[in-house]
Length: 470
Image 1 (cartoon, rainbow, N blue to C red):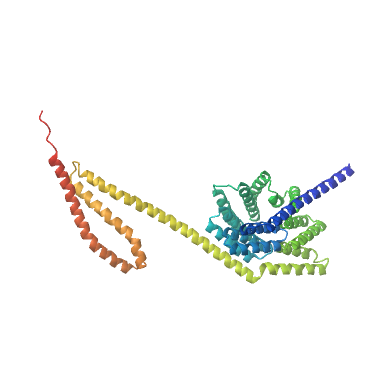
Image 2 (cartoon, rainbow, N blue to C red):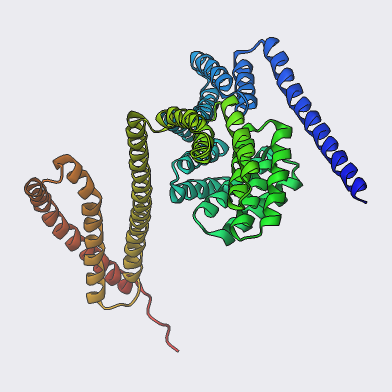
């Protein structure tokens, strides 16, 4: 029986390795296909698009190559004034810089991506820019801000009515669910985190989204470990390893190695713990994943602190280099400045939106008043044709002219305010002059209208034929 179990384990291992090899081969085929298309491209626009797509394929395995390709695409897109291409290249450049730990420059590129997308009204790209900014806040461990930006991305995506690129829409929505779930987990809101990750898993299976499956499984493992379901947690971690290896997602692979190592550290299995920390460090170094290098080397330095001081020192030195790269004071200041500028921009956009809403309400009210005045005037004329006491007619005529003049004052008040820069004394003098013209005019018009309506009533009475004698 024991021999059979051993054979089954070996068989499962071989099948898993074959599956990974097949998926890596498929990934390489996509890269080779893009390279062939790029070599035969006869259009600048398509060259930009292909460079950007190829940059994305290299993002999680060779971020330096990804950066160079995206930058080449940006230079060409700028040269031919291809704004949409510029926007998407800024996205890839930002993601490559974030991967390598250059957060201030990454934020700058994401903001450029967002502003061009807003200018061109590219709703999908606006959502993706907000997702990227949310992830950058996550790297700074500012999870409330990360949740805010990602929920905004979710709203933008859900508001899109024309979903022609349905697979692209679903994949982006899948990423949003994954990220929100993880941010809620880090914010210790486990129920919400589990709901979002389960929804992400269901959608990922439905649309066959292998690209994000390793990330989903990793997050589900983290949640299960947090709620003390250790057996299920390690199962999810191992599934995540296989999925991440299969598609060459070395960032998620590094994070999974780290979380498995943490799991074994907490369960007092030091040999397994060290093995997985070393795997994480090696993978992070291969892909220039600075954050992963820092965490893995710091943990290894602590574990070797008592048993092998020379090795511990080497790991500490590696950690110090990574920390300096991530948390350089100038970089931190630059990043804080960019965050502040973006917050100011968001406030300005919100204030502008409120101002426009107020203007719309005011314009609607002015339109209703403008419609009411002639209607009221027509009612006054009609009253002149029926048997109504002349006092009512006089009152209606005075009221009609009063409405007209007050409406005129209401209209010119903002113009006068802009002209005088809202200086009270000058406004007062202008309105006194206008009143000097309007009051006599008002008096003459009121008198004319009263006489007109009263005479009309008298004239109609005069021409009314007498009733026939019976």
